Length: 50
Image (cartoon, rainbow, N blue to C red; front, side, top):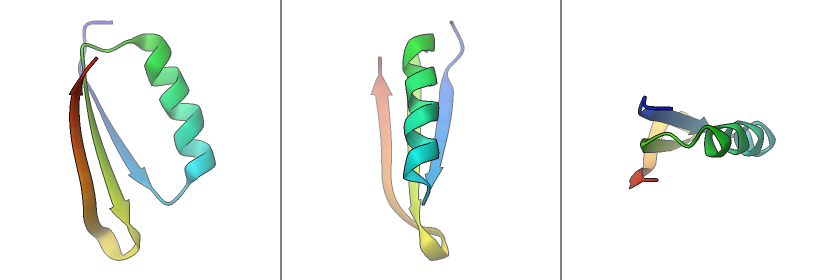
């Protein structure tokens, strides 16, 4: 895979885990993870080169 991926996470840990496993298998060159708490409060932004 050569396409960067943006992964938005919101309050569903089981779904998040399944999707993250699929992203890990695809091995994108860049991964942007954005996690929100309820009420759309930004709590974490992680930009990681895989």
